[in-house]
Amino acid sequence: MRTHKDMYVSQVLDSKSSGEWLGESPELANLSQLFVGGTLTALDSLLKGETKTAVHFPGAKHHAQYDHSSGFCVFSDFAIAADIATKDFGLNVLILDIDAHHGDGVENLTADNPKVVTFSIHDGNIFPGTGFEDEEGSFYNRPLSRGAGDKELLTSVEDLFVTLARLKAERNWVPDILFLTCGADGHSEDPLSTLNYSVEGYESVAKSLRGAFPSTPILMGGAGGYLPDTRTPEIWAKVAMQLAG
Image 1 (cartoon, rainbow, N blue to C red):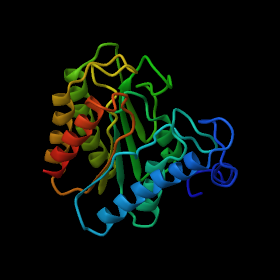
Image 2: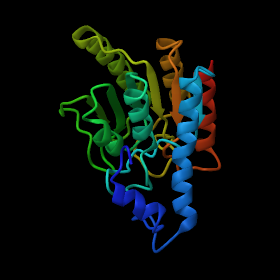
Image 3: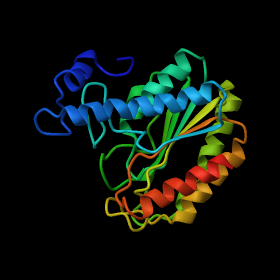
Image 4: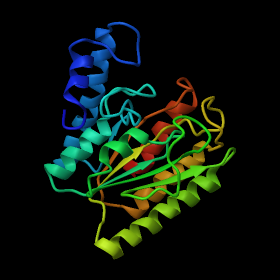
C-alpha cells in the first residue's frame, strides 16, 4: 500500500482477483504477494550489509501500475523496494531495466521520487508502446530499433554512465544502491521481442555494472524471459555470477 492503491491491494489479496487471470485464484494472489516478499528479503540483506549482491529471479515485475495489473505483473516489487530504500533509509536508488519491454510501471510509480532514477533500455517496437527517448523527468529511456543487438545494448549502458556523470555534476546525485531488471527476453532466440542480444552481451552488461560500481549494493530481479528451459535461466545465472564477482 506504500505504492499501490489500497482498494487494488485488497482486490488482489482479499478478493483473489486480478486482470492477469480469470475469476478468483488464491494461488496466484498468494504468489504475487510472495514475489514482493522475495524482493524485500533480498533488499533487507543488502541494507544490513550481509552481501553486496542479492538476487531474486521472480522479481522486477515492472509493468504493474498504481491501481491495476499489467503485462503479467501484479505488484511492483521494485517500486515498493525503492520506496523503502529512499524514504526509510535515505538512499539514492538507480533502477536499470534491460528487459526487452519498457519498464512503464516502475517508471510511473517512482517518477515523483527525486531519490530514484530509472533508466530503461528496451525494444521500441513492442508492448507496452511507451518509453520514448525525448521524454523528460527523473527517468531515462533508450528505445532500440528492430534487430538491435549487443552493440546497441552496450552503447546504451555507456549512455547510462554519461547520464550518471551529468547527474552528479548537476545535482550531486549518485546511486547508493542499484536495482537491475534483468529480463532475458532481449535474447535473439526469445519469441517476444525483435532484439538480438547474446548471452555474452548480457554478461558484458553485468561486468560493466560491477566494474563501475565495485562496492555498491546491487539487487537483481529476473523480470521477463520466455525460454524457461534454455536461455532464460542461463542468462540469469551468468549475469548473477558476474554481479557477484
